[in-house]
Amino acid sequence: MVNDPDAGLVKRGFVLLGVMVLLGATVLFIIYQGPRGGTPIEPTRVEDVPPSSPGWEIRVNAAAALARRGSDQVSWSVFREMVDLPRMTANCREQYHDAQETAEVSARDLVVYSLKALAQWHEKQRETGKSDVPSGLSAVYAAVDRVAESADPILSEQAKKTQATFFR
Image 1 (cartoon, helix red, strand yellow):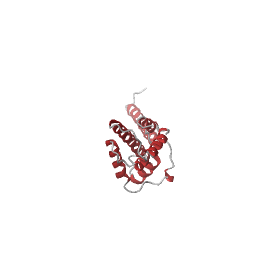
Image 2 (image 1 turned 60 degrees about the vertical axis):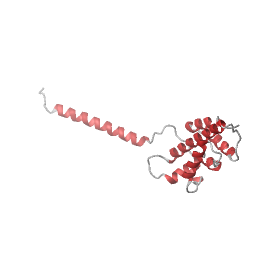
Image 3 (image 1 turned 180 degrees about the vertical axis):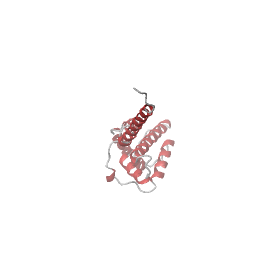
Image 4 (image 1 turned 90 degrees about the vertical axis):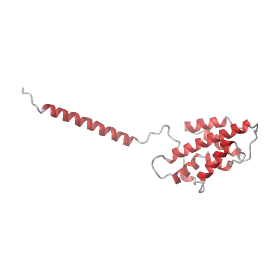
């Protein structure tokens, strides 16, 4: 047998071809696998829920800021919307047109943010010795109870932590 000098070149070519096929298959697998965002968010019929009126972002930020400070001026009707996942998802669908983050993930983050602000409000009220439930807060309690039953463990866990601060 004569040692062919091109045999090594052919072997390297096949190895390189195999590596390229493997790389291509990996890229296609990742593309067609879909997004991986932790736990899936429970499906909601956002089409049935209209978005809030314009300026909702400002109202949400103002209500959360007042709640974190323990103010008696918190708008509980705004807070009821803030912990309503379908409503926040509809709002986020209207606002976010880029593909960096889905409306569902943004809405979930807003609800978690709202739940934390609500818990801080209760803690501030407790520090000042107040334990009365203002009008409108009972509707927020009911909305938080619905969030606590969510299939999403992040929402459910934060809602249960918030419920522990309630004046019940």
